[in-house]
Length: 314
Ligand SMILES: NC(=O)c1ccc[n+]([C@@H]2O[C@H](COP(=O)([O-])OP(=O)(O)OC[C@H]3O[C@@H](n4cnc5c(N)ncnc54)[C@H](OP(=O)(O)O)[C@@H]3O)[C@@H](O)[C@H]2O)c1
Image 1 (cartoon, protein in one colour):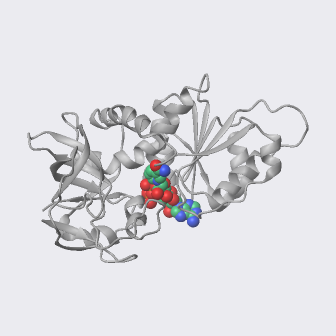
Image 2 (cartoon, rainbow, N blue to C red; image 1 turned 180 degrees about the vertical axis):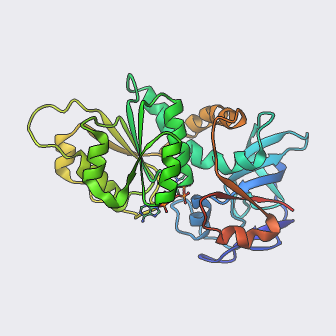
Image 3 (spheres, helix red, strand yellow; image 1 turned 30 degrees about the vertical axis):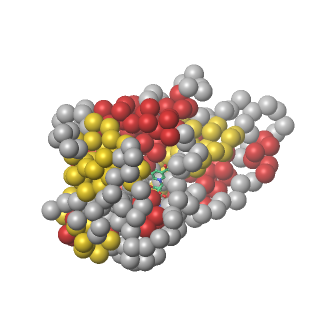
């Protein structure tokens, strides 16, 4: 079959012929309709992700929309290496019907970034009486812009979106968040909070950006903290590490945890997939996507613009 093929760590994919998928027990062969080039796809392909297996050649791609043998469009994922979804076909263990009316390209582009906020937001709504303020670090990214919409939909009365890119911060504002430029530092973040702690911080950047937020949350005094803050580590677009001041953890009611493959139970992900896909089908989520033919996968891989590159078999 035709596929995007990565021949070694750090290499860009080449369009070519790859072995047909060999469905194992519990897997079915599907015909791919669309698959997104998410950051995790790039970092798995580069051997840089904690889930990388380091074997090449491989077909990149973790999820997408595909047609099954009965003609039903399904959201698929969990593809066994060396195969992936940037190909004409795949063998998938999981396949959730895509609701009528949903554009396969939008579903393929939006599920991975969108679920990254939907899951921790839904989890947090079960822990607090009201979401109140949600702070998004990296709100200008694809995942961040969808996170603004998800937070609003799940009842946050205030969303603060931190980012670098000024043009995209304007877009973040149009989606319903208070934009804060990261280069304005901790004082600007503190001003935007206006004395009200967030119940939830969704962090796509980590590194200096997370440290800026922690500086903004610093308080003085020995009294009880009436805040209830959960900082969820979702991505490390900025840096792999961040220095968390010990005094902040001692002085504030702050929990730091992660969300991703490994820390979020698969059962929880499966339970929430239909709800988020229904939002896409209903047109309730604006997801920036840009389609490329599979034979143009090198261009799709090189694309660094504001949309999610989605590859469609030609
Ligand atoms: N754990 C999970 O389940 C999960 C799921 C989806 C995504 N993620 C991760 O979340 C992150 C964002 O995903 P995405 O789909 O939104 O990717 P994206 O569209 O490429 O966005 C990347 C974001 O990171 C920001 N950024 C990059 N380098 C930065 C730096 N040095 N300082 C400050 N900001 C920086 C970008 O800001 P500018 O716009 O200013 O460039 C942008 O907001 C990625 O690391 C991805 O792997 C994790």
